[in-house]
Image (cartoon, rainbow, N blue to C red; front, top):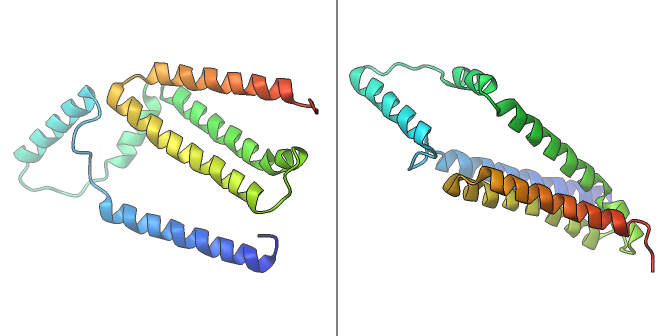
Length: 167
């Protein structure tokens, strides 16, 4: 959107889409998944259900602060959190340089470059959902992480070799 009016339309579409996703998420939200994601979650659910059966009066209590603190204290969580933050930083840097790099490759600024940037963001989201589901079902976290790391390293080496190589 090269004009201010175009940017306003773009932001209207983004705001509408985000609002729609938020409403659908709120409508489809469940307290927990149909099946426990792990054996430890199954045990925790069983204990929680037993406590609920023993206390007929259910009182309102916030469990999130305790769970968040437990996560922060958990072994390995801070490493996963740091990796997540680093991945967000990397994708933001790549996104920021997509248009200039495509311009250097001969693509004119406009719809094609915008679609390439949008495709990159969609690929990140769909890849995260797909790989996340795969890891949840197979519990092959290390295999997936190493595969992603080696793929990224290979692609970065390829980009590094081709950097500055003009035919």
